[in-house]
Length: 429
Image (cartoon, rainbow, N blue to C red; front, side, top):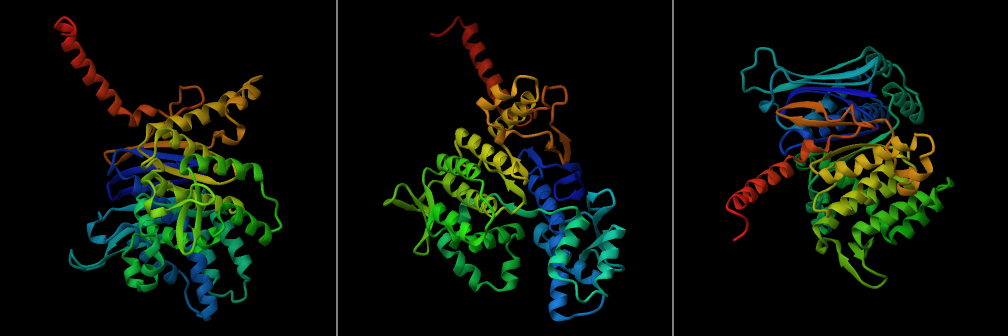
């Protein structure tokens, strides 16, 4: 289990959290959920940055120190994720512990002797084993690419690809027909002006979109042609069932446009579909592609409930639980009590299934494929600080749904006041 600490970064003043295989983060708007999610993404993709630096140096046959190149890469990414340093607190700190002996720490330092408005920069501190590994690369010239990937995976205790699916997905879907043109005409400086996570999300869409020319059947057929590994078709069928319930159609990329087919002959262009369909279509496409190609991932998903009816929110939670049970990890931010309520059902189902004589009864109601095991955490952000919202006394360790359902309490209290006014006047007129 990884651990992360944030001090004075954005709206976060103090945050300590354990990153489990299913982690949920909630809180009111502007409480810092995106800052925490981006911090996780930054830290979990450092292994990819290191690999990219070493690979580039090998291809260009560059010598010299590796650590300055890695530091420069991380500084640029930090800037793209969190914006200008000028608005940051001097005592900012971000620390991520990958394992007991492996960590990274980022702090903000002003340049020595610089004026207050002069540029400042991020300093990075690594555990000794990471430093030793980077220094070794200055000498090693012939390490195979696959071996290097394996060594970095072992170093960071992390074999999962990290994928960030940002909020505001419907806007990107609306621009679907312009994405290729926009990205082709933008220079590197213009691309850097786009939020880093959004940029990577768009790049992923553009990369896998052509695979959907024949819809999901074509995607599955392509996968069978490319890889000899068996596909768990029960999982795929369950995914497709849940996707169909939410999208009410089948996605295809046909004639250079994205479409949602209502039946074999009738479709709607994706930018004319409902906002809920636009928000979820690429969540589903990315997850389906991951499972089909058996790629293990740490998936950071912001606000999956956006523009969705409560029943559809429940379906999305079940889909995520299905993905999680395929040896993937989920990091979820949400405002929705329906999301937490649906997740609690899956946690409680797993708890009851462990009791003697109950497993078959429970699994008849909620399949074991959806159960959320004991490797989960839930946190609530408020006033720049973070606290657990797992109820330790509750059976099964359920999430305290009320932390984000205060509006219902307030609405009910107002209704009671109005009702009492009527009652005190002797009932309805």
